[in-house]
Image 1 (tube, rainbow, N blue to C red):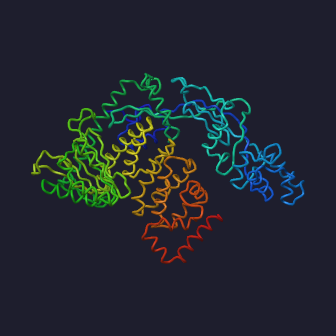
Image 2 (tube, helix red, strand yellow; image 1 turned 90 degrees about the horizontal axis):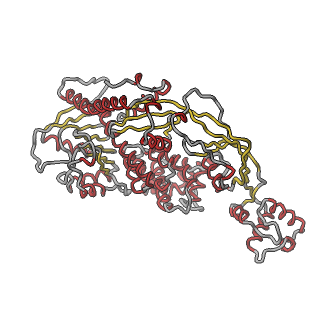
Image 3 (cartoon, rainbow, N blue to C red; image 1 turned 90 degrees about the vertical axis):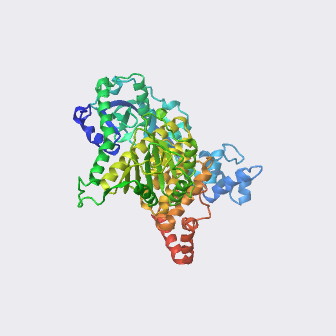
Length: 633
C-alpha cells in the first residue's frame, strides 16, 4: 500500500491545498509539499510624472501657428495677426517653453512632445514626483513596481538558497533605459504611466540602499500517472510560477537532490510511483465493474440521491444506441477508442460530425492503447486525421480534435456529461465486418457514474492540452498553440485558455479565443462568459493598432458584442464602459462617429436587429439612456 498523505513530506499548512489539487486533477498525486523562503530585493525610487490638461484658446492658436505657419512666426508677428498685446503672447509662449511644448528659441517652434499633446487637445501640466518601490525577484527573474513597500517579516521556513543556487544579482535600476522602466511601471498596473492618456513617467531615480525582504514560497513534487512522469512546481499561494518551476525542473534533470530538498529519496519515489500506477490503472476497471454490477442488478441505485440507470446493450442494440446518443448531443462529445480506421470514418460518419459542428457541438477524440506513442502498433492513418480536422463550425473553428492519449483499452463515449457509453465495442474500429461478435456496452445515465467517467477522460484531455501549450510556448509556435485552445474550449475551460494568453502576453491568440466563445454565446450562455470577456477587454490596452493580427481582432470583437447584444442588449452595453470604448475607438473596432448604442444595434444578429428597428424609438431610447447613466457614474 502506498503512503498516505500523513506519511508523505507534506507541511501541515499545505495539506488542504494538496487535497484540493488531487481532487481537481485525479491523474496527479502529490509526493511532497514543502514551504521555503527566499530573498527579494526592494528599492525605493522616485519617479517624475507629467500629465496633460486641456489647452486654452490662446495656447491652441500659438501651437497651431507653430505647426501650420511657414515660416513659423515670432511672438510679435503672431500678436499682430491676433490683434493682441505682445505681452500676452510672450507670457503664454514662455509658459509653453517651460512645459517643453515649444522650443527654447524664437520663432515659435513646436517640439515633438508638444505635437503629441496637441493631437490630444492638451498641453502638459508641470511635472510632479511620487515615491514607489521596485521589487527584484531573482527566482522569477522579474522586476515589478508597487505603491507600498513590502513588510520585512522574518520567516521560519528553511532558506531555499541552502539547497539550490539562486542568482541574487539584482537589476541596477539606475542603468535601465527610461523606456524599459516605463514599460515595467505600466505592466505593474499602478496607473502612473498611461501613454494613450498622455500620462507619462519622465524620469526615475533610486533613493537609498537596497533592502532584503524574505518571501515565502511553496514547492510541490507531483507524479502524473498518465504521463508516468515526475514534475516539480513552485507556487505563490495558489498561483503557479511557471518560469521558476521550469527552471527548477531543469536543475532536477541535472541532478538536484530531492532527498535534501524535500526529504524524498529515490527509493521512496520509485515505491510511490509504482503503487500509484497500480492504483490508477485499476481506476477504470473498478469504475467499469461498478457499472457492470449496477447493470446486472447486483447493486440497486439509490433512487433518492440519484436518478438514472445503467443498462447493458448487446450486438445490434449497440450501433443504434451509438447513433442516437451522438445525435442527441447539444454541447460536447468525448470519445475514447484504442484504434481508429477508415471503415468507421466514412462519408456517413463525417456527415454526422458536420451536422453536430453546425449546431456548435465540440468533439474530442482520444485514441491509443500503447503506453508510449512511438510503440503504438496501429497509429491513426494521416488521411483519416486530415478528414476529421476538416470538420468546421459555422465560424470556421475546427470542431473535431483528435489526438493520441494511449494506455487504455476501454472504449468510452460521454455526451453532454449526461450519458456514458462504455464497454468492449470498438466505436471507431472494425476488423472488416459489421457482424455481431458478442460485444456488450453499458449505457449509463447515473449522474455520479457519468461524472466520474467524465472527470477521468477530461483530465487526460486537459493534460494533453497542457503539454501542447508548453511545446508551443517553448518555440512560440502560433499554429501549435491554437490546438490546446480548441481543446480547452471543447472542455468548457475558456477561462484557463485566457489565463494562459494573458500570463504569456500572447495577444495574437486573442481573436482565436474570442471565436471559441461564439457557439456558447449564440446558445445564450452569456453569464458564463461575462467575467472572462471583461478580462479580455482589459487586455486591449496592450494591443497596438499596428499589430499584424489587428484585423481579425477587430472582426471577432464585433461578432462577440453582436452575439451578446442579440440576446441581451443591456449586458452588451454594460461591457462597453468608457475605458473599453476608448480602446474600441483607438483600435478601430468602431468608428469615431459611432456610439455604443448604435454599435450594439449595428452588430446584433439580423433577426434581433430587425426586431430593434421595428421599435426604434423605445428600444434605441432605452439603450441611449443606459449609455448616459454609465457616463454619469
